[in-house]
Amino acid sequence: MTFLSTPVLAEAVAATKTSFEPLFGNQWLALMVILVGIAVFMFAVAAVGRWVAATHPEEPKPVPPSIDVFAAIAAAVAVTFDGKARITSVQPIPTPVSIGTGQLQWSAEGRRQIYSSHKVR
Image 1 (cartoon, rainbow, N blue to C red):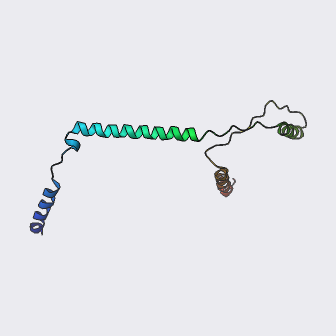
Image 2: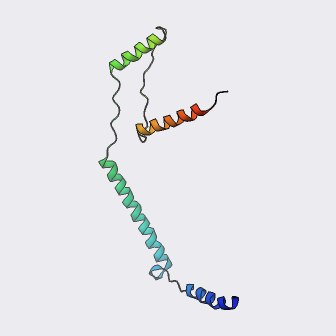
């Protein structure tokens, strides 16, 4: 079996040993061409990023709550604490921009299911 397979393996090895010439005939020239190509690609990506940023302005900032909202908060605090509390400031809670409300609801439901599956000791 080894006698028959030896010439086949020798021919396969000889077929893979070809003389490899560097790109453009010079290794340094090939390296420079590749580096320049990468730099051009980086500038193209930066240009597209700037174009996208210019054509898609930032979302408008949320409008501060109206006087009605402040009145409702003050009434809720007064009823809850029997008028013994004082409101020092009201600040809106920022919502994550990248996550939609649907994803927030799904994650909250998943946490609720996990917490409800645990046994209380």
